[in-house]
Length: 173
Image (cartoon, rainbow, N blue to C red; front, top):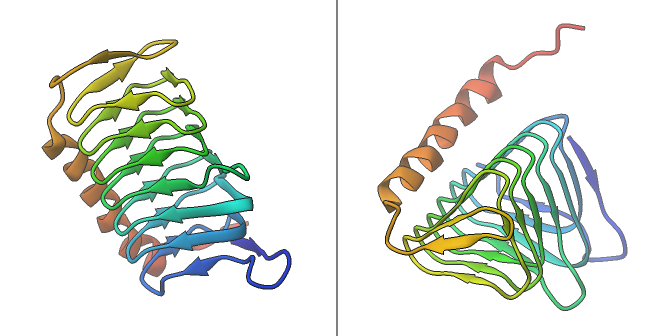
């Protein structure tokens, strides 16, 4: 893993039970909770503010997380950030899911149990209600259309992968 600090105090804080793949990059004020996981090709750059990733949350392959001076990026507990998702200055509350290729921008909030669909665009300032689905470009909301249990199952799946990767991952060439 590539960990980079900037000035004093502007460096990643990784809980000992978190997992960061060797091909991920973390820069600046990135805070990872217990059993959080960051997968290959992910870039998390917290140079202007803080990026906090809660316990048991997974940041999957190729995701990009950034923040702005005015907007930190916060991923709650038991969240899934899908492959190639882009989060910038937004909040994902507990047990929410950002689908593969989704983009969630400045000041947007994905409430607990909500799902942002694959390739959806959540514009700045938009609030996705609890247990809703946000689909399309720009995202349209379908309230009470999603079950938080599916988000929790996905989060648990990635927590289970951590130990396998810690024990068995080895570079072949």
